Length: 232
Image 1: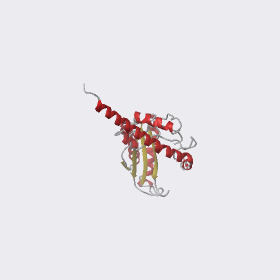
Image 2: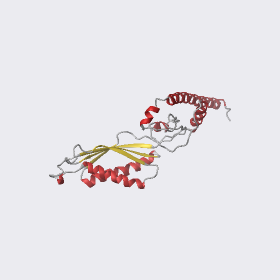
Image 3: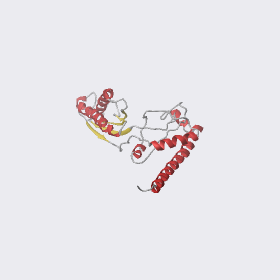
Image 4: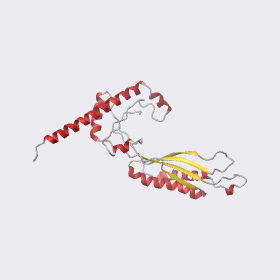
């Protein structure tokens, strides 16, 4: 990333694939016989834009149109889109998904098209860092000479969030660009093969190994102490 972050937090994330099916027709000769699937998607996108005003500040809705016709002189009979939704907690995704799906249903209703809504993959849960692992990582990162961690609100999603709901987890973020550029920017490609990135890779591997060893040693010592404690 473009910054150093120990206490990583993530959004919960859900995915949605949308397919509209209409009826093709000639837009000049017999437009009244057509049912424009691209128009259905436009109506839905307008509805989503209006919905955003009424969503909590940390909820996100974003996506792309993947198909909306192939020729300007044919009313599109098929349009597709892929969307993602994000919220601070997994339980909020259910409400957000319902509201977003209603916007897509509105597009179908307004244009006389049919809509199919599919969830292509399981939801990513929000990431929950373990306090003890975080403490150990922070100490080890200082020994390695890493920069001090900044504080950042959630900005990403990961399937590691699902793991963190089951076992103690951390997800440190290491700086490779000095703030010059961030993920999904073209300049980040060059930053990812820079000397700073190579050092971050080595520091990350060593720091995580140290942290895992420290965590395991602390648990072993705790278990041994519990076994040696006199009964009352």
